[in-house]
Length: 602
Image (tube, rainbow, N blue to C red; front, side, top):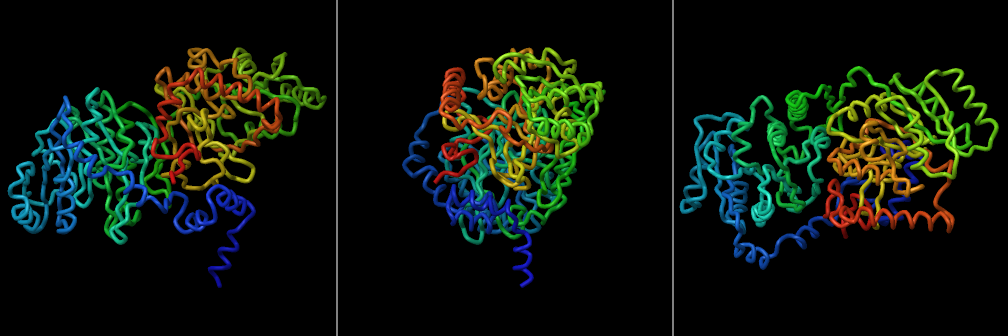
């Protein structure tokens, strides 16, 4: 009875609306599985993987393939009292590789001789296996380093003693090295449930994302690195045991000329009662070590920041709070027409909720007709020396209005902001600014919520139906989403200009907003121009705002507006055919983007 009361107490109108959306999009069965397993569970993954993994015919074709570049890949494994089943399956997953130029380097810190005896009895004729019995157990890092000492390969892959590689794993790695000898390569992965023997919980990863790596160790398995880089950075460090791989990956990518992602599930992480895959709370020290790994990385690359570990249930995720040295001025640019109440709601939150004080607010007046809005403008400018109103005359053109507004500001950082927004998290502007001040960053987006506390914006994925779409649309504000993306900072191809911060120098470098995009596409286009400068767009999920979307100008709900929207989409497609063809690098081709961002295929 108490359980029923708790469930009923937790139900509210917003959760009911969310449930109805799930039923509408995916059916009632999907809702049941969402309630039971969470938003990231894919009921049909095991069947999908088995259908899409390399067939026997394909594996034989791979064995017959003659690459022009055939590096030796050393697979490093630290064993410790490994179960016979796990040891056999781990080794056999290498024996069955379709690419044959590999060696398995085992550093055995076991308390008995089982592993050594088993290898002698079952793999005595396999010259590619190099084994060393260690004098003692040096811990995961120490044992792995001693296995690494056995490696003679051009590249080294790191393999847990109870996990599995797919039979085409090394083939796909080597295939990716034919045109460019990347320093670091990583793959997608999933989990093998030791109880059900099903593959589940696939991790379809983005291409290299430094902000996501600082937020969580998304690279994890399978990670392969050139021996040249290893010689520069050294092996694993025992002071980071528990997250020694996170620390090691940071040190490698810091020295890498290129980091490449193979978007295929090529590694199975086994879930059993003693693994962190099965019980995230089983090794809390891992998450503390991960925090120190992020801090150590930031110190090496000369970035001043503080790192916070997120609380349960977000263990293993981190919030990097970048310093805002000298607190530079942020110019907040707000286009407006009429609607005093909406604008006042926005401005009041900037003055009363926002904690970052070195701001100026520049309101760009465009075609207002209501007397009370002009009176409000006068009041604001009399009461606040850091607020001014400038007038743009002409038809509504979002790009032209903002380009005009930028000429009126005095700050080196610009926050493009819709009048239908409101600050929720007090440190939102400071958090965005800290990220934006980094040399490698061109623009920063925020997490925007509808009034019902569901997500309106959490980054933009390019390619949906020939254009783009907001990620995690309609998810609850605290929803874990896909692999925790809505809870951390991550790199995206674009973010909405409803709340977008950029450097003034970057704005000038890309020529501002493209004025052919009057209403739609302008912000995505702006971000892609920044990406073309090799600068990052960061989605900052610690900057949280309400967005009462399109209340001033209205929705695209008339034939004329729809036609205008379609014309601007056509212009966008003509301008950016490459990314539409190749796909968003911060998404993953294994998802079915026709259904929306981060949606599993059927």
